[in-house]
Length: 231
Length: 231
Image (cartoon, rainbow over all chains, first blue to last red; front, side, top):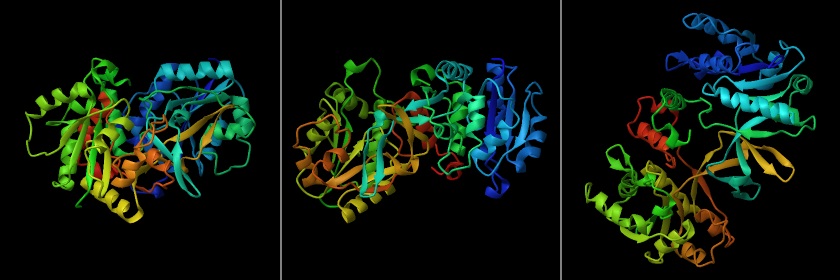
């Protein structure tokens, strides 16, 4: 919708972190992971401004790489900061103070336009929205005495895009950084805003290991049994 | 070790639950899922008594099916009960009151002998042991007011085998059933016993969907990139 924006965050992995190419630059099917992520938001709304936050060590790599692929994707690049918080803050600097802003992990390439649409809709209705999935594992929580069971029915696994009104997000990101700011929701909550949950998607997995990349490849190639798998 | 036993639980899925064959009876590579599970404990210790708890609707199916495969696996079958608690109780009835008993999900076929060994060793040292993995997702917990972030560093995803001294396990399972008895650890804790954690394995995944079965197939076929994936 007019005034909305998206920040795609891939700012955290400098070359000093190791020799390996971060997963968002590796191939998933015929395109790099990050290309799929950009394409997903393009499919949702080709007119929406997209800010891509890349670690400065990887900007040149990406710009060379992407020349091999489509030129139809339109986005601005800015450089990442020390943490995710700083990267999002850098991205916000390029966005005008209106509409809603979605913040999305570069390493979640299989987000569907339907999930983006649902999350924006809930954000407009309730003030903000983040997608979550029910917990599927039995869980325990560590305590000073040892550990105890944690009722998984009360736990949710958090995904992105996390969507907030742009002026609120800008205000929240003017705060000083704190270590507990692991995603946008935790930053917004310090302003006293409740966070609203919307149903996520199993497909919208985060690719962090080579094995995740293989799973994403299976999902992308679209097994005929997809419906039965509930994905 | 002399006196130890294992109960493999697949008791919960009667035919009335749906038309589909429960995942533990489907093929994973050249053998049914459950065959791999039995084989894993056979590989750890071919002399250890194995009790397989199957829902009564599926006992005949399994007995017919398994004739196509190896006859080297030695185990007793008993029928499952209304819940996992009742199924484990039925299994315990066939075990003498000595050593340690491991309780394992039938739908975790890729458990390694090394993990079984490590869990038994910790159980002997500390009194009991269950394998867990660190939480890899951002987490939220539902509260009466809405929801709040949950520090994932304190959360663990629980696996099996869960290993306890047989006499203690028998005593714990003489209690009346309560809905919070979702695994063996929660039953044991009501006796005031602390539960000890040991490092689990990503490979030791629970197969509940067709998609999980495909992932397990990938793991079984042993991608050359397995090491890099940290699995």
